[in-house]
Length: 258
Image (cartoon, rainbow, N blue to C red):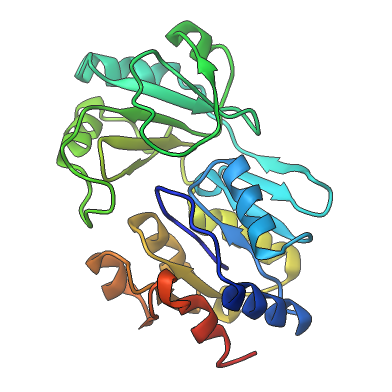
């Protein structure tokens, strides 16, 4: 499993692409598992030279069949109750929602300060009209992306909304960002679904990650590798720490076996 988890697009180097190819040539499945939306997962697969297999996206809420070029599985929630609770907790909150490969639809004040596929502006009523596998609540924050700590402003908002874990899974991010998806759905559940398809056990799975939302995979997999740029909590939870993405950490680890 490979996850390129960055705010701005990070293209894998030739060394990483070659290492991934060696794994596939050995008959071992390679899976992308990411918190990014479907279009980001597909772009990463293209960058890595993956044209077969699966990509799990949106924290496990969706799955894309790379060979067929279509979504093969999706989970969904009704966002209305959650969004109404966020608004009640802080009326300055703004929202973005993903619907398959269309791009981010967003409310008027949502800050578009990162690279993404933007689909257009919508109202809350329009947001309520369709189920989604994931939406984002976001408030103003001075906590920078990649700071290594979850945003305290977003954490307070999430606590104020007090969403029931039986109805929603909540991931508090760095810079005012909160991901909300189906209950019990995480990167680990998305990966486990694909591993089951291949008949691969968790004990025989190696995962790479660098952020808090990778911790569920670290708990599930037989061997967890934190990238060198990972936040301290993630590094502490890993079985080993690889060099950073910029130092071809994935390739250096994979070359030990392939």
